[in-house]
Image (tube, rainbow, N blue to C red; front, side, top):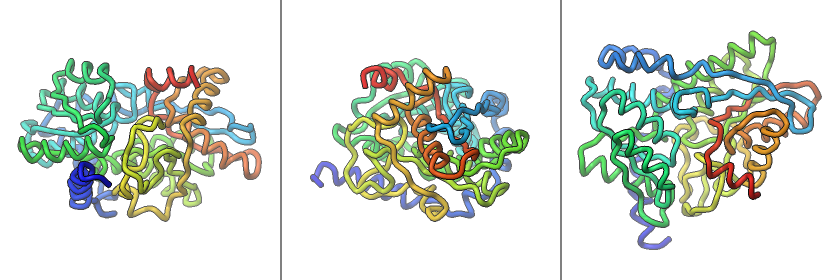
Length: 350
């Protein structure tokens, strides 16, 4: 590792280690945090109906031996599952600060930044965002259009460099770092809302899921949904889907290799702190970016569904689980969004 790469590793690793959540933190009720935040900032309560209650639709598995229920998170405001995460992070920050007068900084590769910028503009919260070096100018313009301050990590440091820069900004400007990768409240929210919605719909349809598949960025969605489904169906498997280009615990430093958007190992051997206490409950799978792009095209052409590369990857791994076992089983895949302009351009040219 070069001298230039050493500082981001040290700062980011320290922040992740210092705020790594315990199981007790993750399994604590989110509803209590939510109620406290709503009392302090009634506008947060007004945002709540725009988040969640997203639809599910069933499609055949890749080889047609089973059905995969897609949880379509593009129906959230901002068009992404990260709207749920942004809402949970803001509730937690307000509840901890005891006021809406909290100055926030966070790092993001795109979807979470968009949701946070939209919400903070509505709430009047001072927001600073750090994106990876080389992020599209389109993204930066949109974030600034919502009133957020935007900066970038250093060249060659990837997503981890954005995290590192956010740690520096938090200290220099006395801002509260949301730190999505350690946000126990986000995982708890996904357990109580996202996972509960999935379980309720499946139960209403008479479905016993064989497995849940979710692509992993910070890990909150995959973990929360898995905990909720395991509570109702203890034998339901859980697939944590990572890019083949950046697997869980990836020992390599981050780079700009194209991969499923919003997902991946952090690099330098760092583990997602939300997943680490629950590793034994997951099966870790990988999907290469070209595979995810082909799955995107298939779901659009065969079923009229525009899904992100990470959602296509989750469908692909859920399919493989069903197609290599007894026929007639059913699974769930979380679809984070419809896919970015860049992903669909890559899919068209793959």
